[in-house]
Image (tube, rainbow, N blue to C red; front, side, top):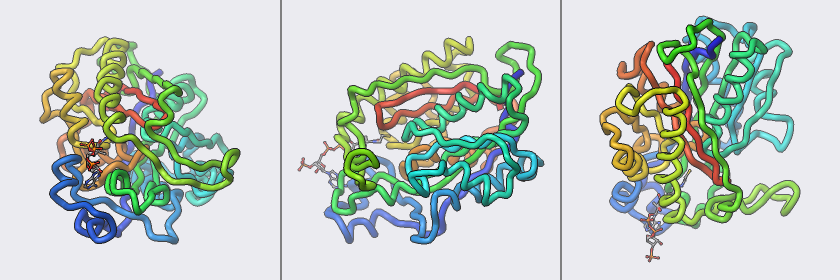
Length: 322
Ligand code: COA
């Protein structure tokens, strides 16, 4: 059995924050942000929008795309680092708001690698017959973790949500099958200080703010992402030129280009939404996937490679045929 993506949905909050808007609150400029990151704008959730609200909108679209209803859903895995509450898991809040029946629901916390981790976990349930209709969500309100006086971080992140429906389908066991073909996951806890939030339940008792050593994260990102892509491609027995679309975590246009150069990827095969969405952490891959499908580039049957790196450090990649 394979876990096949049968529906994709995305949601961005209405409010757009431009680089010029940020230049009014920190010493930065539209030119600097575009040149160093490729980011032109980001979306920001309103004060009364919780991350579960963004996720619910993305899930409704994904379910409609799959021809399913909330009543069909028996598994919800939500990748988020900005859950509504410390507990319960945001996935259970999404379950309630969507009106899904009693089933399995939990969160996965791997920061920007969250969607890749969540897809890999979901594959274990779906392909082994433990779920017939899974929602895998990446959703974030990163704006809530920003130190709005730190120009090195507050310009980089945005809010949003994306979701996919995964259903089991019989395959032949070859790379021609639809569905998840392989994944590669990595974590290195010794690199915590490069990217973390300086608060938490069992330490400060506060939510905290995001802290980052940007140029060191940058260096690790290119090497680690290239490693994950290579590992996942080898496991699926696919070559880099065989991949139709690379759907990276959208942290920085220069990271996307650095990885492409290192692995000899054709840049026209890399889906980039970093200019419009900025870094939406766990949401960025499903948002980019939805974007590439909506504009007609990504089609059913295409071979996709999803990849990400984030706080932890964590990194990973998933190979799947749509
Ligand atoms: N506007 C203007 N200047 C800024 C700035 C901003 N928004 N942010 C940082 N700077 C300044 C720094 O203060 C520094 O000034 P100084 O030399 O006077 O001290 C200068 O720009 C260079 O800083 P540096 O951090 O070396 O810049 P950089 O070229 O590495 O670019 C990032 C900074 C954050 C854009 C880049 O390192 C990056 O994108 N890193 C990866 C971050 C990431 O993707 N994290 C998430 C991974 S999931």
